[in-house]
Length: 132
Image (cartoon, rainbow, N blue to C red; front, side, top):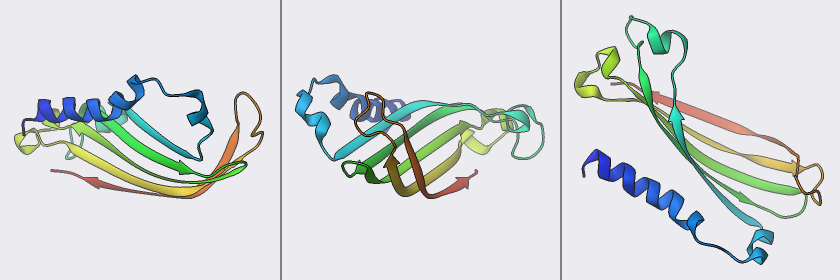
């Protein structure tokens, strides 16, 4: 499958459901699914260095997080991936650096009835970086 088609398909899968209006009652559901798409921008020597593994370019960032719970407490689990361009760093065939993360934890709402709900959370995050 061509790369451009994969990105379009991924964007449609994430953005498509959000384009349809949903009844207001659905906002009270204990299940929440959040999808994110953005840019992965390298910093410091990872962006402009000339050593091995340095000099990466910007790329795609995306993630999904599911929260389940009601009232003050909720559990969450998520997945995210950052893909940094690697052609600038001299990687073979322009393969990207890929950072994949998984997280799980709990959230506690500090003011669950407020218009904007502040919360605190505790959890575990693990990330694996693959380089070409």
